[in-house]
Amino acid sequence: MSMIRYESDLEILVVTKGHPFERDPFFEIFDTIPDIGWSAVEQPAAQTFFTPEHAQHYDAYVMYDMPGIEFSVDGPKFHDPPAAYVDNFMKLLERGHGFVFLHHAIAGWPTWPEYADIIGGRFLYAPGEINGHPYPASGYRHAVKHRLRCVADGHPVTEGLEQGFEIEDELYLCPIDEQRLTPLLRSDHDFVDSNFYSADLAVRGEMFSRQGWSHPRGSNLIAWTHRYRNSPIVYIACGDGPDAYRNPDLRRLIANAIRYVADPAHR
Image 1 (tube, rainbow, N blue to C red):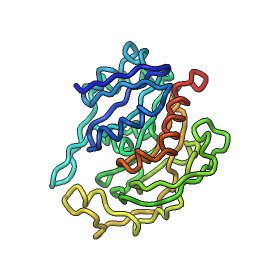
Image 2: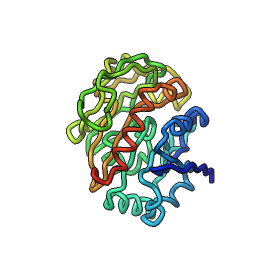
Image 3: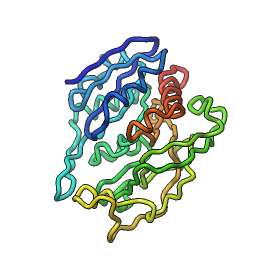
Image 4: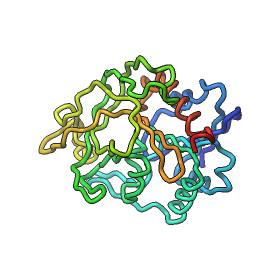
């Protein structure tokens, strides 16, 4: 188990593993937030902390993990989450524990249908089904320079970001359940399949390919919030690598999101 701990006014648990990332530049995000202390733990050891007893030590959880997926040249293999972990996760949602999901976390636990409902969308590494509707594999595009437009003036998560901001980052083309969500930020990128590559082909060794792949036009929603059971949830699609991690506006967005879901008034 990998565990790091820094103490401050708010205490958060940052959950990682399942997708490669550059550790030091990523964790620097949390070092720059003066009122937020953080601990980091990797999957599957992180599952130990998903109990009401452990969760009382943390004001919020930040999910930057992508569990339940094993990659191979024959395609991804999916694994079910442990029943006890699912049960404890749902108990935390019932108690109103706050969660911030970042970037690739939207692809986690592909065999757990409710997990997509908790987050508000699902990135698919292979063709699949969400709420009874079939979907093709999702799309990705690295290093896209785009501008984010605030569509939630006055919301605590977008405080100080009302004018929007520019970022260079990876984007996803995947199903998002907009009807259940409160939009926060939208991208000016055009979310059509000709602007993305197939994730299914990528994990089979064909990077940057869309040969034989198509996908319906997708949502340009980059950040949103909603409630699941009694918990405030924020998802932010940004956060692929160091260039994004160092973006001061993204850092502010993440800090705002943590404070928002950690606030007892929003539970």
